[in-house]
Image 1 (cartoon, one colour):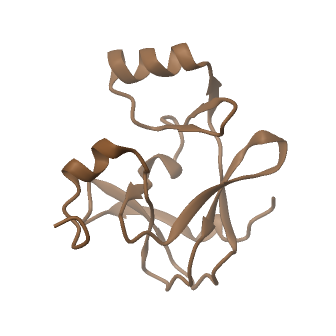
Image 2 (cartoon, helix red, strand yellow; image 1 turned 90 degrees about the vertical axis):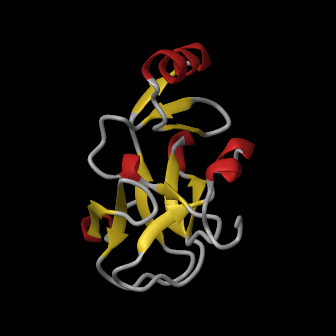
Length: 128
């Protein structure tokens, strides 16, 4: 995947949590935004990093775990129940961030993290 959109993704403070990633151009629904890359680790190492280091930057692609903690952008992808992106499989067993609806320049890019505990802490209008 060669995305022209990754160059338009910036990191800045988020009203959702800490920093977030934002897009500076409009993106049509279904367009790939960026690859989700990082260190490929085992399930045991994933569990160790989560428990011992509090690492919350790990994605799973149904085959392996991808630790994005040392990345410049994707680690700032925040959860929102009314999300505008989704994580899909890409070539070579990788992952990519794709627009799930039309996204307007200036919007924060978000996904639904999809694990039960996130909804206990979510303060969005859908969860409130």
